[in-house]
Length: 309
Figure 1 (cartoon, helix red, strand yellow):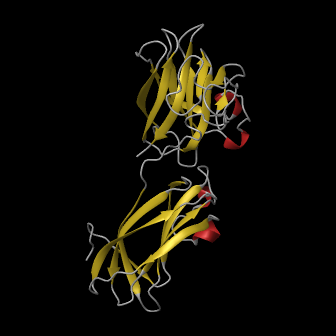
Figure 2 (cartoon, rainbow, N blue to C red; figure 1 turned 120 degrees about the vertical axis):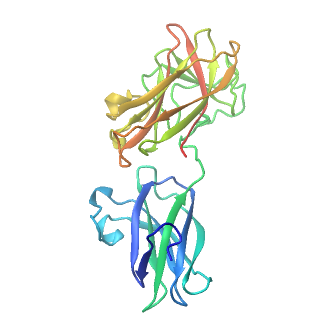
Figure 3 (tube, helix red, strand yellow; figure 1 turned 180 degrees about the vertical axis):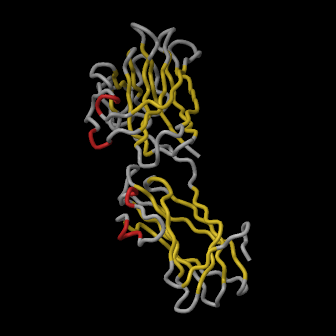
């Protein structure tokens, strides 16, 4: 009996099904649940995560995952139902993606019937979930490491983030003008200055929650927070570049944040941006933050987090 709605899939020994489930979130536990039907004493399934390969080579109906799209096995485990023969059991496991693949790589799930010759397993209601993860690298701008606060060191670049134009932003140790609300470092961005980075690949029609501390160094301090999509991650510059010109990404949504806290302090602020339907999982996704307070002003940024359900 199908445990969920009408259909259930019978897989003979050695049979497998697989699909892409987005792109890799490195070092992340993926929780997988499914109903496994015990049609024989030894009915069992192997559940696996694969990564990489080329989603553009996905066949219409049939194919072996390693041969057709060139993906690589990164982890798996077996599930053996103990329920009475003829019934289905809801089973689950967690698999970790490790650190050999990144957000630019496709992620796949594969399920194989492994009960032995002449046996079969029934599969239904396969679900894969992960807890919300911060998608940004170096979110609190703590790298490079300036050591303890009070050293007065600063720089005009910051690891994992790209600044639009050299001289538009300065990494401070949190003792100069705005106290760093998270860690030691905070980034001062002059009006028109912006920082950006890739945060994985697009999940279409998905709300992304963005939060950050915005330091109000002037009356008019404010920032514009944006999502961009597409472009070519392989041409990301080392330190400086305008996102549309350097990687060819396209703006898909944005909104402004204006702190109302007292001048000289930072305010934790947030907003939600949707990716829309014009880009697909194979397209890169980027976050961009620009200081927009007006001539002569600056905004301070710290602890940028981006999460999606």
